[in-house]
Amino acid sequence: MAVVSVGLCTVDLVQRVASLPAPGEKVQSSSVELAAGGPAANAAVAVAALGGVARLSTVLGSHPLAQLAFGDLTACGVEVTDVLPYRVAPPAVSAVSVRESDGERTVVSHNAAGVAAVADVDLTGAGAVLLDGHHPELALRAARLARALGIPVVLDAGSWKPVLAELLPLVDVCACSSAFEAPADLTNPVVIRTAGADPVRWTAGGESGEVVVAPTDVRDTVGAGDVWHGAAALAVARLGAVPTAADVPAVIEFANRAAAVRIGHEGARSWVIPMRQLAS
Image 1 (cartoon, helix red, strand yellow):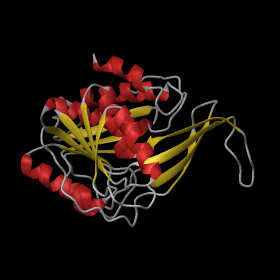
Image 2 (cartoon, helix red, strand yellow):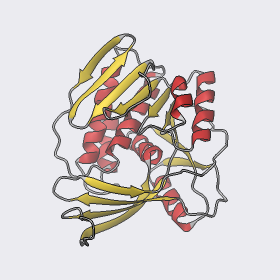
Image 3 (cartoon, helix red, strand yellow):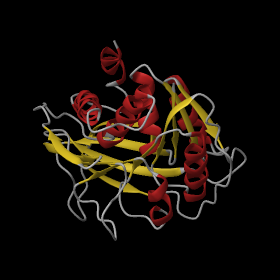
Image 4 (cartoon, helix red, strand yellow):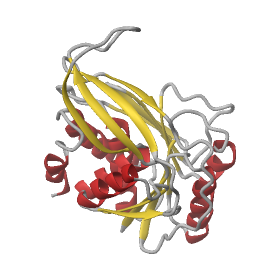
């Protein structure tokens, strides 16, 4: 079963620093990396590293930076579908600084706002669809098709976006942080709220609970939430159905373990090979 991720792909410039700069301050970095990023793309890399079939539907285009992202993703085992392959503008870019002492980071990014991506998404063989809410038209098309085909839809809610008002009713598993605020209570079949190192809380089928997060030596938090969502979507795909209350704790535990591997390794791709140990 494949996980089809639909949403944002960026090019991330990641630098490690001893301290995060204050306004007007210049600091020297100890390392520099360029890699594909963005919620949907990072999640797809996690799915592939965990032994799943990872397919990404996104916007890249023909700009040299887009080709860099495409090459990085394919090298990680992700099947990329670019719905606007002839777009000449550069892709979204994120500038990331990671503090060496604790892996905390700052991000300055330009997302997909203003990019109209209207295309069908191939869900052949999909066990789950993962959406990040970016590229709204693409997300809605994918969610509607998944609903028609009976494929579970997982949402990485992130921050509130206008499209979520229309998208949330099509979502089976809404995964968000404790800081996520929707205009109304979430009524999806499964709602999962992460809270960093605090327990992950969930509701499903009228039941609720929480899963403790194991202590982890934090080296790098970039993309950790995206990895969590990718692992959760893969766990849902392997179930072959929307998780029941009995299933949800195992889905969360698997995602927690994947995120722990990510934050325990410095660098954009250093975690990929260790992640494969969870696939066995």
